[in-house]
Image 1 (cartoon, rainbow, N blue to C red):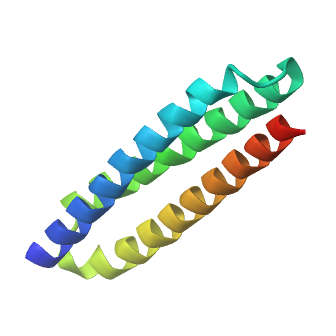
Image 2 (image 1 turned 180 degrees about the vertical axis):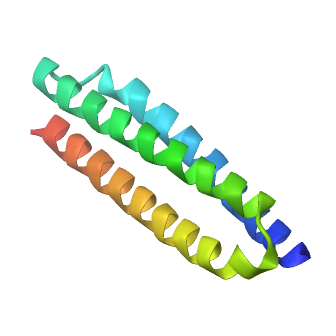
Length: 100
């Protein structure tokens, strides 16, 4: 069981870093034009919803049996990669639009 505990701790640390990055992004949105602010806030809402789903999967992992562990780990890693990639792409998009 220590294997999944280490995995869960690693994901929790990544989520904590992601929360920090999202918070910084939310503060930068205030400097964008009105249209971009609306679009950015919509994306932020989507990311928060995805983050919540990932948190739910992580709780399932922590409460799961060893039999379900590998399936949950794979699902969490896929969800994390998607969340991270989408967030950084969106952040980059809005930072690029802000420079124009």
